[in-house]
Image (cartoon, rainbow, N blue to C red; front, side, top):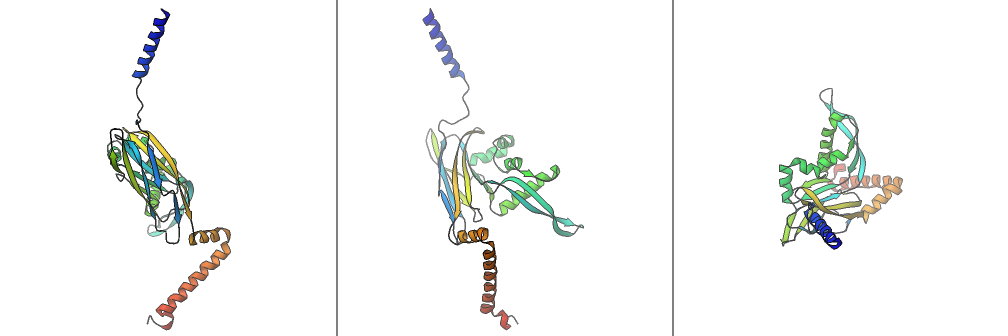
Length: 263
């Protein structure tokens, strides 16, 4: 009798766990790597490519985000004074804004963003999510417009970017498929550490993600100039003036502006 009750309990518990809803996650967790691991800024650095690759479940989509540390910025607000004069109208303070934000996504994520805006926003990615995180010292009615102008400025600098549909897929089987994202790192990137986040998406939900670090440092002449600017500001200023004067004298010598060559 007791044995029958034990077996009945085991059967009931087994059936219970079998009937539990399965979480929205892939059977294969996201696996990713990136190269290079270190980016060095030399005298002739003009940007570079960062390759992020890995594997996700066959039926899923993927997003890759390269994000820098949060910082505070003060920007000049320009506008018309007296109805026709363009001039600085004051300062605008931005807080909790990353110094770099680059997003790449697979083609399926484009369809999700276009067809289901609410689900896209719930994922917490993209410029709209940054807008919710950032703090702007301005009247509430003006914050949205100021945030959009801030994003435009950063995009023009190459420090913010969104590249939908630019992650390509390679070999796949019943369980997983490979992906590759060739991410452009702009020449204006500041030194420091950056977060590389790979997000696997299943049916509009985050199934898995991996986080790794990318380091950017200066070497050679840029490192020397940065060291002078921070540690020997007087000497740095003197050298800057000396270089400017030397450049002016060289222009005068080669183009003859001092000998009436322009007449």
